[in-house]
Each structure stands twice: as structure tokens, then as C-alpha cells.
Amino acid sequence: QGLCLRSFATLQSARLRKKYFETVIGKDIAWFDVRTPAGIPAEVNEAAERVGNAWGDKLGGGVQGLAGALGSVALAFYIGWNMALVILCAVPLLVLGMAFMGQALQEVANETQSWYAQAAAQVEECLYALRTVVSFSGERKEIKHYEEAVGQARRGAIRTHYKVALGLGYIEFIWALSNTVALFYGMTLIYDGKINGSTGELWTGGDVLVVFFSVVTGGFMLGQLEPAVKAMNQGRVALANFIEAYKDVTPIEGG
Image (cartoon, rainbow, N blue to C red; front, side, top):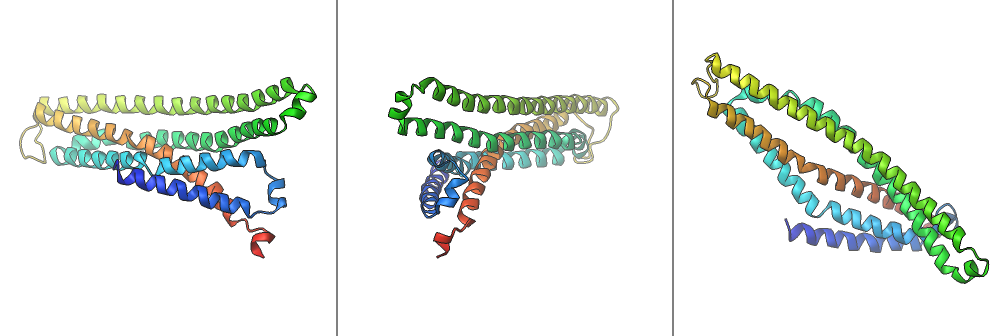
């Protein structure tokens, strides 16, 4: 995981930088008229980093978390399927919270890339024409423009992170509630002298704890998917921007 995925991610990032540059350098003037040329280097660099991050350690951690979650849940069903089913009844509610968080993460990936690209373009244009800016005493004006671009990115990121925090709080609440219900149900199985259908014997405290902690462990392992999903969403957005530019064939390329 540490060697193979990192090497693969580095190769993909380097290849994307090359292909992105080849794609941009072949465009005609009309293609640049609807974009900010000074912000293209920042977009290329950020896209390559995000694609490399999506295929690196984050991917390995996500696969590891998914495998651990499935194994833990399978063990819980083997020891006591009915109690495990009670705990997993909260999964649809958790999926709603994860979907809400995923949408928020995708929004921040789309918007942040555009905002910081505009800020970078503002800086490069100012530095390229620094003598002109100084001769007209436009330093304060350029600083104000840069502050506005960065401030827009900051406000958008804060607004989106509020959504992420709300989704995470909802997930933690549902998970804690399901654990409480599961322990209460396990206690009633023991006190009522119920037979465990998986073992054919009476329910014991050990069975309840094994099922409970197996599902809890599966939940923690499933939590490792969040960084992987976030990285994959960011990489998908960055790759989509490259594919859009790659498929936009101009007359120069067509000729």
C-alpha cells in the first residue's frame, strides 16, 4: 500500500501534468478568451495533486477500511444475526448523513478550485505588470482585489464546512442511538433467557459484547472511508476539468 500506491499516484500525477500542458498549449486564442490564462498553472498543479492524492494512500486506507468493516459485520452476523440486524437498522439513516456530507465535500472541491485559481491569477497578473502597477500607484487596489478573491474562497469554505459538521454530528447521533438500542436489546435477550439461533445456546454477556464490538469496530473501520471518498471526489472533479479541456477540440488542434 505504501510503496505501490504512492508510486502509481506519483506516475499518474506526472503524466497528468504533461498531458494537461500539452492540451493547453495547443488551444487557440478563443479558448483562452473565456478563461483566466494566469490561473491555468495553478489549476494544472492543483489538479495533478488531487488526482495523485486520490490514487495514493487515501485509496489504500479506504480499501482497508471497507474490508475491515465487511469482516467485522460478517462476524457479528455469525455470532448473533438478530442483534446485529438491530444495530444495522440505523444504516439507512447513516447513509443519508454520509450522502449529505459527500455532496458538501463535492461542492467545496468545485468552488475552492475556482476561487483560488482566480486569486492566483490576480497575483500573477500583478507581478507580471508590477512596474505598471507601481507607476500608477495601484498597490492598494491590487491588494484589495486579492483580498476579495481570497475572502470569497474563505466564506464559501466556511459555509460548506458548516454543512460537513452538521452531517457529521447527525451521523454521530444516529450511531450513538443505535448502540444504545442494541445494548438494551441484548440485555433483554439475556434476562428473558432467549436462545441464540446461531449457537443454539442461551444468550450470554459474551455473545452480546462480541456482536456489539464487532459492529462498533466495523463502524470505525467504515469511518476510514471518509478521507478516501473525499479524496476521490476531489480527484474526480479535477480530472473532469482536464477531460473537458481535452475534449474541447479547437480549430488549431483539429487542423
